[in-house]
Length: 217
Image (cartoon, rainbow, N blue to C red; front, top):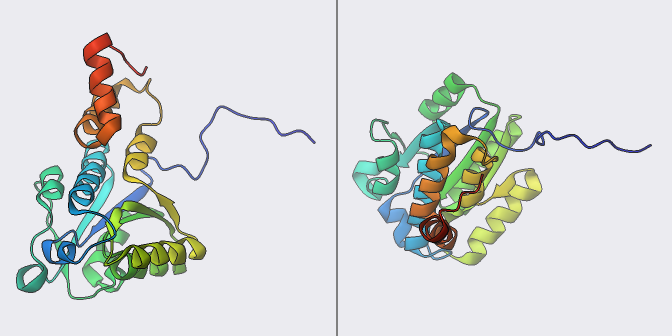
């Protein structure tokens, strides 16, 4: 029997309103020992994710571990996207075991959890496996995560994917929230974030607009 195609998005695609983004432990002490991704790229990708979520109004939780006593403040690039939002500081390595975080997850009430942070094998694996176990859909922004080695990061990603988590990238997150250049109300937001944090893709947008007045729509 033939399958009929329809011009509608797949159910697995994210929208700005169907998920909670949890940004975990983007702190200096955690970054010092991160070697699976260089610090400049990590900060850039974290900023891309944060500004995308803030711009599209996606529900977001910012959480740190031992901020005052050990790990230091969250990256300025993330705080700049959410200047009024308080950090939820924890003692637990597994964010999902922190009562304040879970209280906020339940207050928001979204069925999908998007995770990124440091380190992949501890602070991301913990909440990913815990949320999956409780029936949530879980997405992990792989290039906005980092670990003490490439091996540690890759094996952590393998473990989460095998358990059912869906991997994605920072730029993918932004473009999936936009998904149609005809959405004029968020067009300038999306291209502006891409120009600032989107690397070579952002440079391409700057070039095309400057030289030819080009427009994706």
